[in-house]
Amino acid sequence: MCMMQFDNGVSTSLIDQSCSAEMARQIHRHKLLTYYLGLLFPEDIDPSEFQSVLDLGCGPGAWVQDVAFSYSDLCVIGVESCPTTVSYAHCLTHVQKRDNASYEVMDLQQPLDFTDESFEFVQARFLLTVLPAEHWPALLTDSLRILRPGGIMRLMEMEWPSTTSEAVQRIGELVQQALQKAGCSTQAYPSMQARQVALLHEAGFSQIQRRTYEIPLTAGWIGLHPLMGLLRTTLYLMEPTLLKWHITTPREWQALLERMENDACSEAFSGTMQIADSWGQKDFTSQAGEISYVRSTMPS
Image (tube, rainbow, N blue to C red; front, side, top):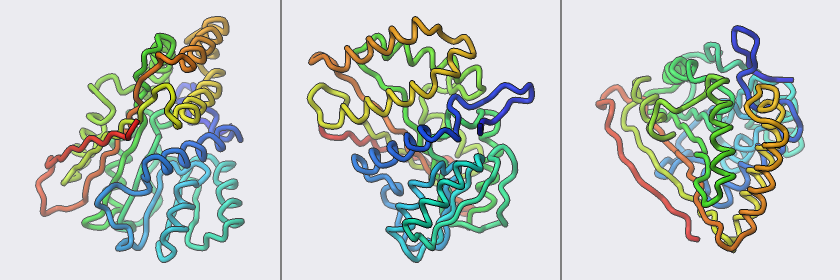
């Protein structure tokens, strides 16, 4: 099993990263978000001018492979702490003949094993349930080190869905308790995006930009079923940890999942899922803290 550990031996990951179902979930999540939002790179960023890009916590390499395919002259590197996942990513890349993509096993809680000013773009996506909050400042400071002047650091996370379902709300509360126990909680900030902006600013990035993408979760929308399916799989994979840590009981958990399913099938069901996307620039001629904000809403 590939799960980061506290000093006392308690896992900091809510999901076993080496599980084949988790690798499939990460690939499915990437494909869904790319299909609905087209988020390989932030808006207004032209990757054709880059030479090398880095994906921190790349998982099975879905983003790395798509970027390597779309930009054949670009060197795309993914790093991941789980050797099993990296081996899987290598196999996929070999089958798809992505010669410009590569992977390395690397612990994100340790200094990044790259020389200074190696990349034009570094990103950390969907690491909330994996990397404890105390390690984020060091990771971003090290990312600043390996970026070339003018390079971009990007952070992206999914907010918990806001819906009319009380079951979804209660499940979110339980997941937040688990994140708190794992040291990954973001409750000190009013929102995920506020946390991203603060981290980028404190690490020394300038020209910080942020966008919030709102995905509708309304009855009858074509994307509701696949997105709720993604949420269902995520909760299924979190279940062993939540039960082991006594966050919930088997009876309560199963009842909540059933209620969530029933609520999602109701014509009265509605809600939104937000994607927080923030990035900053390594540019020592600019004043840190210049922040722009755009909210993008998908059509329902």
